[in-house]
Length: 229
Image (cartoon, rainbow, N blue to C red):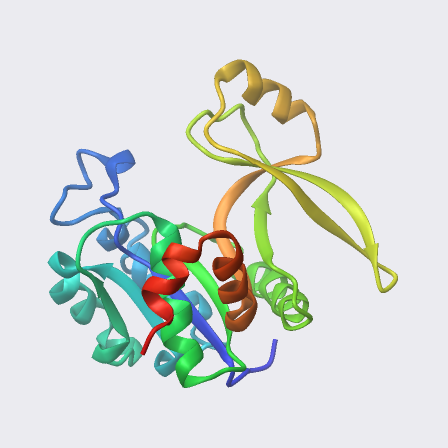
């Protein structure tokens, strides 16, 4: 995966990290914790993509309460302070993505965005970058791409993707047919046995213009909030 000047990372770092309680607290949620001894989960996220996405192309969406910690932890990755987008109040993922997409699109209409959580532990770095490269290639063709994780247990705390196979330009890809949020244990066990289901990783890759068109079509209130000016 060669360096692409139009590729940007949108790192979502506003979560409170309740799953890691009591290690994770409101003032220092899990993305800021050093779990592996190699740096915080946020720093590992930036390190993982650093060879492919330079700091100047990294944008971080977070709450104002975390601004100081974000600036401190991202300094060595050369993320400009102006690339830290501070939410006036905590909202869900969609407004954060729309805000970042509109902001970056105004700067670079050819931008491709890799939307990434700041709190994932990914140890197979080389394989991850290969997958990301394929995702970027699809996104450049106008696809909305998400990364799924093969489930290893009937987890009820994660969302699931139901997929089906499709041929596109002679290439077999998986199409997401349905999102299911945090199923009960009975459904989770069914999903585990059915190989067409994957955990929703919360990682998305798409062109800024394409996702903004989708917001305009399906979530016009959010689109209008960020498309002006």
